[in-house]
Figure 1 (cartoon, rainbow, N blue to C red):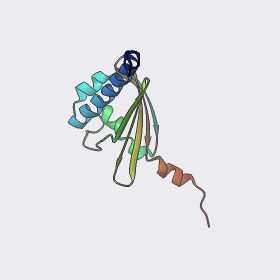
Figure 2 (cartoon, one colour):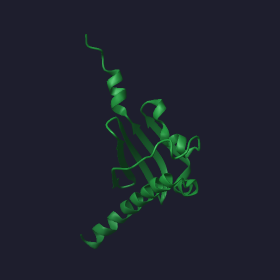
Figure 3 (cartoon, one colour):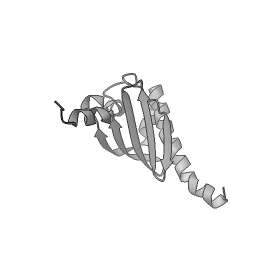
Length: 126
C-alpha cells in the first residue's frame, strides 16, 4: 500500500475506532464516554419492530446496557459511514449504520430484525 493509499484509509480507520469505542463504552455501562462520542443532536432512524428499539433506550437512559447487549460481529468503515452487524442466536439480527464526522458520531440508521417485518407483510397464502 502506498503512502497516499494509507493516508486515504486513515479517516476510515479512525471512524471505525470511534464506533468500536462506543460499543465498548456501552458494554461497560460507561455513559460518559458514550455521550462524549455522540453529537448532542444525533440524527436517528429506526426500522424494525418498535419493541426492539434497544439502542435508543440505552442511549437515552431509559434502560441499562444489560437490557440488550450489542455484540458486533462485523464492523466495516467506508468513508464517513461505519456499518456494524450483529446477531444473537437464530432470531435476533441487527445492523447499525453510523456516520462519523471529525471523530463525533452524528447519525445512526438502525435495522433490527427486519426479516420479521418482511415476513409479517407477506400476503397469506391459502
